[in-house]
Image (cartoon, rainbow, N blue to C red; front, top):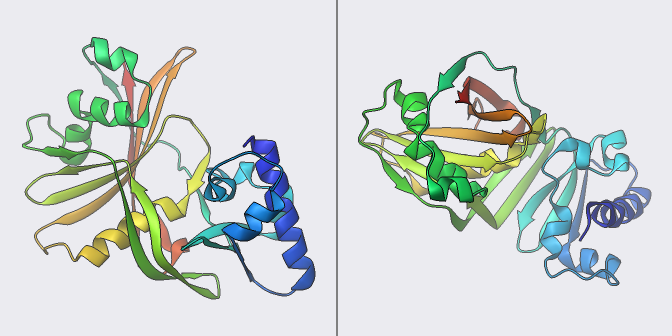
Length: 255
């Protein structure tokens, strides 16, 4: 599904629901409604039509009325009044970083390749500990499910067995670093992606010896640019999506 067709489908659903319920701050819809609206569009996953990785990609009607989309699991979604996106903060520290080119590293441009680069270049070691010599295990991407309650503005929502993705995890004796990767440079990101990770590990009840560190990685290369930007976030209130707070960020310029 093209971005334009995706936005048009979601626009039609939102405007229909908002017209019927003009004063509601939450409008629930399902994959079945998406499928019905996009019946003449060939795509296999209705969930894809509800995913917008940057606020600027949302249909204009949502941005104008102050809504975004949150996923509730089991094929259900909601338009919610509030801000589900967070602007990346200005970079506070820039490091020049030397890496060794490898054949496989040059071939890969995927998010999985970025995860490998983070480890092989020792960037993640430096970001987490300030040194390269760290005993660390790497766990590849995984898809799983989690359930939780969340507050958005004045609305309380329940996500039931929502499918989530974690791009990778780094583990040491005292840290679990969960990673979200994007190989494109937007000015903002969906908070939900990091909130899901936090809630997943909260549900798993990590031993108190571990500190969970949630890190968003932006990898850009080409057209004269070659860098990693690492942003570490936490949530001041683990029940509120809008309580996200930057811990630190670093840009690694590759040479």
